Image (cartoon, rainbow, N blue to C red; front, side, top):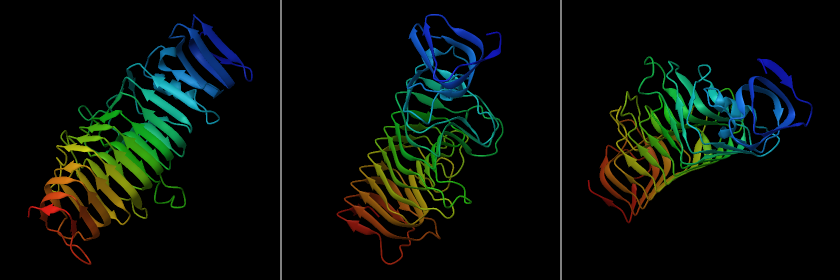
Length: 359
């Protein structure tokens, strides 16, 4: 294409039965691209306009640092998109506080490869930005890998693997998010100036591993009906850590609420490496319902929090709050706790129902 722009007629189809296009820009107008035989048919191309491609595979592309962006340039809000990422990719955050890609609604993403973030000095950014959309899933055996080992500078703590914001009906399943300068997964409602906008609802995180992230494994800063289950939250804050370095942190932003949160059958190990209040799970400044079941924790921390249920859990270390933390409606059901320490429970004590406290 000699680095020229090719504008495609409305609703036309480009079919590759072998061969390739390279070195240029394709401008679509509800355009379909089909690769019938062979792979790597799209070489050093950029895409603009609109495309109708129900299935998009990384195999279609010659791999370079723009491949992930090229894939999502071909997705559409008008149809259901199915994206397969089968090649190891390296990506760059384009600008501070931005995502490498912004997902569209009705998109299923299957990752069976490693997506690695290039070293940066940004205080914030992310690989997948699931913003203002619905019905998105990310699943597979893939790894999202951050730059905590090589990050330039010490400022900031907000580079994430997956950033979910103002989104509904989102599933993150079986992937690994590790070595991020901030959190593996961050769930956020919107800025304090967007109070009238919808919060995150219907989020399921299932079978995910968050390993060696600098600030948190998973943060829930605003949302309703969020389930975190069958997941591993390990080694948070172990590398260049910053507080609170919890496996899971439930801590609403000012003016927001977190409610109907379920944490079930999760594994925690070596979290809280960068704080005087280490915890596998912490709940702070929250007055919505949080239920933790079938989990084994070393430490649990809460402050100014209500409506927390533990059921069929073991807390091997401490169940505690800071000296000025107050909680109420905290229930331990069929739960074994080694130490209940420094707790001030308003309107009564911690309720132990068929539970054991060692101290």
